[in-house]
Image (cartoon, rainbow, N blue to C red; front, side, top):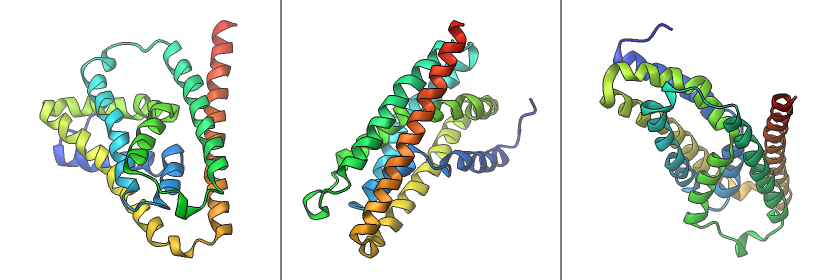
Length: 213
């Protein structure tokens, strides 16, 4: 593998590559839409919750995981458990869609927990890190611990900027949301979560069956 040896060029490539993961619709994207309808800072809090899981994972990969082969059972377990959790969130979101806006306000803690939970449960998050993130971290190692730490902050900042901006725009436009529009958006987000969860679970189950056969 050919690494980028210019630090600033590497950081620029980090932003571009990181955005390939940030811009993909998924569980965090769907949850952000739900929470942003009630709180304009939901995106920032969701990104912080995401970072609570992502920063330790990045440092684990930096120090240990990139040196060892990952057992096949690990991604299978992540897919099975994560798929079930994400499907549960989809069903829960669908059931909550009729709750009156005035009687239900999303708390700061709820948005923060949502960011953490969707990250833990999202098998695609781990897949991205092991398929795309590890080569980035190996490149970051060229620049030492300071270079890697800068890389980690820049990568997470892509999530922070995108979800904060996304939530702010959604919150500001909520006055255009009629009850019907509200229901359609929440049903769509619930379907996204459920489909992603079913896909993660099904893929993991298929891998488990293949490993046993």
